[in-house]
Amino acid sequence: MQKVAIRLRDLIGDVDQIVSSPYVRARQTAEILSQIFFETKVVEAVELVPHSPAQAFVRWLQAHGRNHKALLIVGHEPQLSMFASYLLAKSPESFLEIKKSGIACLEVGLAGDISPGCAQLRWLVPPRLLEV
Image (tube, rainbow, N blue to C red):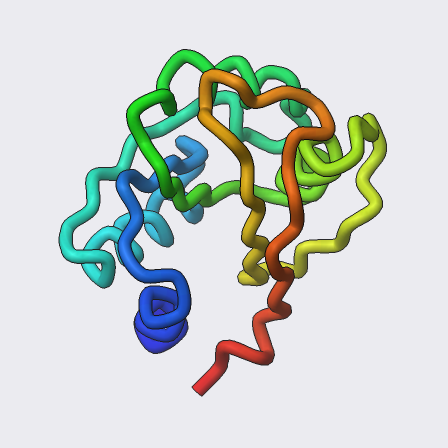
């Protein structure tokens, strides 16, 4: 995981904050990422638990993400794919498949202005491409 995290850091640069589901495995992954991203702060969002509606995490971002330009989000499927689909196309159904340990990069405007359909997909990387 550390080698993948280093490749991710080299790919995206710095992040302002890491947002994690409170579930153990996600939190462990977030802590590893925090070390690789130079002790970036990790915060938990219960809105990232599996089967939470995408709208719940949008509200979390609007309330807590306003001062950040780059967030790294660690969560679970199918919730992350549904969240991405919601931001990309206002779709309540997922049309993306983010594999376990896969990474999607979405570009949005200001966190306070996040709404359905506001994002652009910059890239979607399956885990096998980051393995070293």
